[in-house]
Image (cartoon, rainbow over all chains, first blue to last red; front, side, top):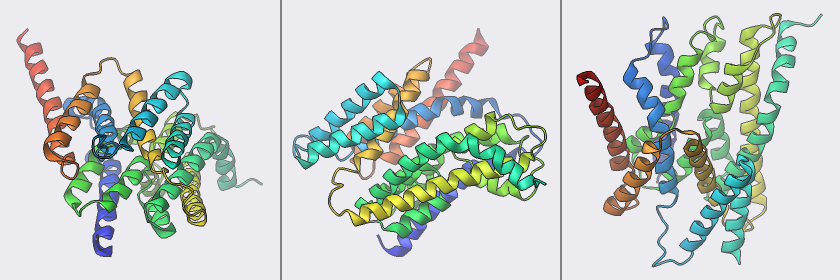
Length: 106
Length: 234
């Protein structure tokens, strides 16, 4: 990517983020009620998107051609187990990352 | 005499201490991650201060390493940050009489800032607008400082951070797991996993996001449409 392309990419992220934040104040200046369908999507979409992002993080894992992909899977399972045990977000992220770093550096 | 700025600051600061811990940790991780992927401290500074939305900032590093596809990037950002739209709706009333500060309050409304500003019981004698302003500003300072610090730290310890990139995977696994554990029905979660995995198999890692996104949104809308018609015919 060239520098210009990088700037446009970052600009798109800024634009997208600011659209989600400013839009309500533009669309509903007099506290008009939100359409039902928008509310419904607002409830249903986030978990599907988070699921998609987990898949996104694993997109390059190819256990057959590159055995280190197994580390991603082991560390991922570790994160889930650690999080189910303590339900502490920062702890799960920190320990999970350490597990992965240990696996890949050994 | 305590002026109203100092008073608002004194009320706001204690509320942000838990965020201080979280943002410092995540910010440092972000800076180190960005650095490990070849993006120096200027990128961390620019992105943490101008985007100021944790999860998409991590994603942006991935976008920058990928092929140039501005439209997909915009769409991805819109859906990942879709929840902010609802934060805004909840804050319409509260932001009303904050004058010019309103624009900064909207700009800086990340998850954590929203959760404090939405729930805080602001004392009667404290200026509401300045309280909201300081919460937003302090949180952003923690995040930007963390990101810059992490980037500098990463740059000074060459090579010891192999595997640091897993921090993003861990972050999204935890966010997904939390949302999964808190929801009543898991339809969307399974839909998201299934459709994305399928799309990855069909379109490959460079192109799978857009079809996955559109299919997920389409199926959710279709399902709503059908269930509404069933409800109407009953």
